[in-house]
Image 1: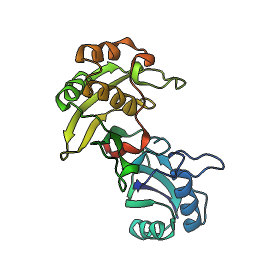
Image 2 (image 1 turned 30 degrees about the horizontal axis):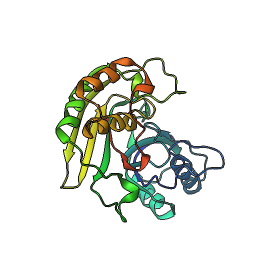
Image 3 (image 1 turned 180 degrees about the horizontal axis):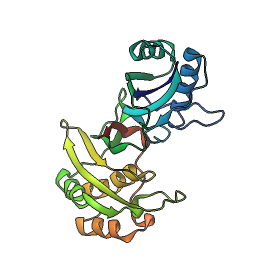
Image 4 (image 1 turned 90 degrees about the vertical axis):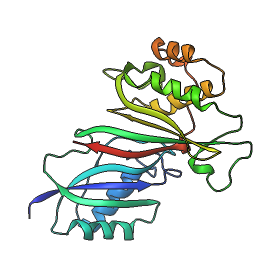
Length: 248
């Protein structure tokens, strides 16, 4: 048998996980999948994710790959994984890819959605999947801020401290605000890559514009300041969903 390279697409409810990345003595998405795959294939399996999601963040389109010595067909492996994983993780797709494929290094962009419930009353059923904001939000003001982050910018103001990178410059391909109904709003963003907490810090600041606490001019000043202390709060994790990872 030759080692084969499998690509999987994963959906998960991040509520009770300490994020994606495997850590000792904590329940993580990567750790649970590796444990189950190693059991099925009777060999130690290490998976490469497209990137990390933080504690409490969800995904419908996380991508990963792993190499394994096996003749099991991808569809059989997918079925076995889904039947054995006893936590809220579902493998949505599994197929063979070229040996050189790497889920992180070959990704060309990622898309995130952030959901907000904008009404006076909180929500009982969907509370783990959206941020509840009582005061009315001005969608047009928030949309102007989205236009101001579309393109190539230094996003240092929206990066959490203690997460050094070689560069804090990122290219955002699109960012927009959509009113889903009379009470739910979604922020959509696609970029080549993201800094730690970047999406949550962006929406935390864009919400300030939606509440008329800052103007567009002030938002742009925050963007250009390269100073995290000037930006808004980090939005809570439960509203964030990794929607899709794009490959060329």
